[in-house]
Length: 250
Length: 268
Image (spheres, rainbow over the protein chains, first blue to last red):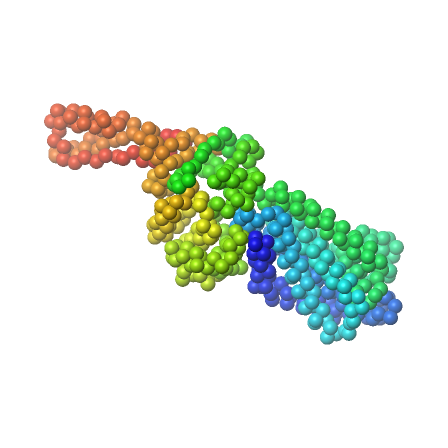
């Protein structure tokens, strides 16, 4: 019941400002599609027989999923900490596991909601067909979970908005932009291609895209295993911090 | 440096207990430890037999805390806030009790108002309502009347008094010593993280303030005298002495010992 209510509260929180939390990211992605799709169409080599704009759409969808899942848990927790209303959750008989899953689950829902909306809008521009929908669903779910858990971690560790913004701007944004959303890593020089393999967001984008085209830079099972491992690692750190009350309970 | 040190006290069920002390004495820290918001380096706290660490769920269900800071979630209305708080405590369909609490705190008219739009006093009422949604047997009020108007203060004390008469244990911290004197049956005074006095309000007043009782006497000819008494028992002797010296007493005013005197003696 504690989990259900906290999850519901987190859902209500982003739904009450859905113009900002859902509509705005959809518009941003549509602009990316229009600008990059037009400018780079025919200039970049992606998968065989796949148009650049078609390649771009799943990347943009997954990028929206990840960024919004991260934003949901991180902004909610930091706002609650700064305004002090986190006390209402801390006073309640809610376990650290319920706390973790409520924040992550709400982040997953927001990430998927924005992703679905981006997909619906971009479908106007390009025809896409899901070849392996289960892979797409698995990567979307796990990727949103990982981004939600990362957001929670950032929210726990940060004490001020600018600390969270630094995490977002210097960690999440570069990892997302350099994850192959706008290009296939096979078009990169060897050094950058090697570095891309160290970026967990690359595996999420690549695996998600596999569901649409049946082609990927890395075998989807390996990508899924790596994303799942990253989720488990971040979840373990979050749970450890939540259990100890780090920066939540004095 | 310890915020609290060697604090050991038991608050009986149904008590109206006051926790007093100057700023920085450790009152809020003690409340935070009881509520699980802060962790003690050593020692244990139990709420009605439930350890606040090992049995935290049971302990927190028995505890309603009104925080000192005016905190609120700007995304929700008053009713949504109270429903969510009920849900955190595992209570569904709590509207009947929520309505009752809102009515007692004069919040019914603001049920659908966003928390942001409320005045400070109204936000304070919602904080109190949030602490009560799960009908906790122990209610902790950390400076509940700080910065609130007289009307709310009176309404609040009537409501809290009723809760206490209904069997709820009340733990109060306040800077308004007259409130503690009026409502608390027992008081602990903290200074620098330690308990410097723990007794019934009556005994504290009798033991610590009685020696400073003063009587102001106005004579028929207009002269005024201030009598320093070590206790009420000295009054008659001193008045007799005045009469013997030819003073005709027209008016007499006694300074009742109050908690402020006790507070100053023990904490300054």
